[in-house]
Image (cartoon, rainbow, N blue to C red; front, side, top):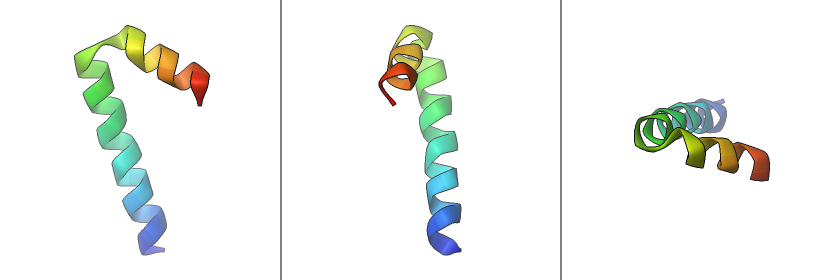
Length: 33
């Protein structure tokens, strides 16, 4: 359970950071993933 929570938090932070940095990179990263 803890692992899942940590992963979810990491994903949220990663998404926020990417959105704040450059939307283009976020889109590219999403495509790769």
